[in-house]
Image 1: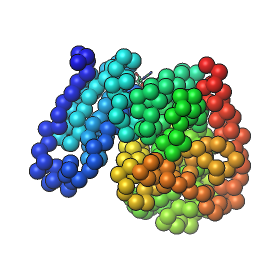
Image 2: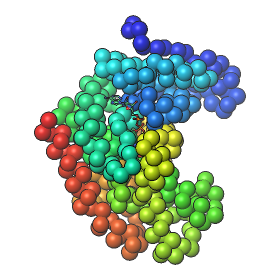
Image 3: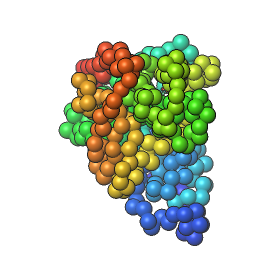
Image 4: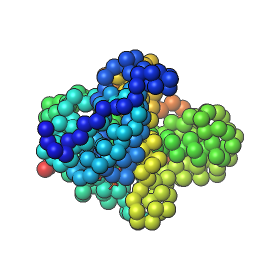
Amino acid sequence: MLRSVLRRSSTASASSLLRRGYSSESHPERKVAVLGAAGGIGQPLALLMKLNPLVSNLALYDIAGTPGVATDVSHVNTRSEVAGYMGEEQLGQALEGSDVVIIPAGVPRKPGMTRDDLFNINAGIVKSLCTAIAKYCPNALVNMISNPVNSTVPIAAEVFKKAGTYDEKKLFGVTTLDVVRAKTFFAGKAKVSVADVNIPVVGGHAGITILPLFSQATPKANFSDEDIQALTKRTQDGGTEVVEAKAGKGSATLSMAYAGAIFADACLKGLNGVPDVIECSFVQSSITELSFFASKVKLGKNGVEEVLGLGPLSDYEKQGLEALMPELKSSIEKGIEFANKS
Ligand SMILES: NC(=O)C1=CN([C@@H]2O[C@H](COP(=O)(O)OP(=O)(O)OC[C@H]3O[C@@H](n4cnc5c(N)ncnc54)[C@H](O)[C@@H]3O)[C@@H](O)[C@H]2O)C=CC1
Ligand SMILES: O=C([O-])CC(=O)C(=O)O
């Protein structure tokens, strides 16, 4: 066994698991791999996935630093076994047998940058990781976090197509953080409990391509047009708000780990046959003329069970939808072109 591969068994007893309201026997075995696991998102996400009782095996992969992260996380008293994998020669082992692969690998933004400015570095990283996924776990659900999501998801699709493994039901751009933000900002303004709030966010994951549908928010709130515009803008600029507050030390990591854990949990629930699991995600879609689009998606045993439509839009949201289409289209095309030229 390679020296830097670590394996640690969970120390939680069956009785302590039962005390917390679940038993390892009641859930099927599920392996989750996190690629980029030693990074700002990767580390807290690894912890949150370790806390998830639906996970039986947690594989933490990065180009550096994973032995430490895996050893650290492995001491937490939950069901899953944790293994750390470092360097390309261990990527195959990390991926083999995975049910869900979460990808937060790549560089984050600094103030003044757009997500598209990350394309040159992250496109290559995503391409090589997806090439390995096609080889070692072609049936896994892929949760793409690496930016620019509007391009990295189409890149992944092209890599999988070339490898002959593409299944559009199994590829997801993670846009959950947009929903998380829309809910927080709405709840704060409406002075309601955020736990009761639901808001679909559609389109893509960059600037104006992020379109929160506050007209469909529950519970209903009587906001003015100005309030809705301000909430929309704050949701669209939520990532930039964090990038600026971190002042050169990266972008959202903790809230992203939270959002990534929610989305991965939804994928696992779907795989396990839990009914009516619905989350927004950037997926292959035919609800608009664009080949990829974020909307509400029903998750099931094979991944996407149904891509749900947009529902009724306000005039303001209709304008937002029209405005986002050209940018989202060109980001999708940029990803496809990159994957096919190199
Ligand atoms: N979808 C979303 O809503 C969000 C996406 N992001 C994106 O997530 C990505 C990661 O962000 P952070 O964790 O803050 O960055 P980070 O720099 O802290 O961590 C990235 C990790 O990726 C690793 N990495 C680089 N190349 C790799 C490779 N070939 N294989 C495996 N691992 C590799 C690095 O070693 C590092 O540990 C960025 O692209 C960022 O823009 C960030 C926040 C929200
Ligand atoms: O803004 C960024 O660069 C990171 C991101 O995608 C987000 O926080 O939504």
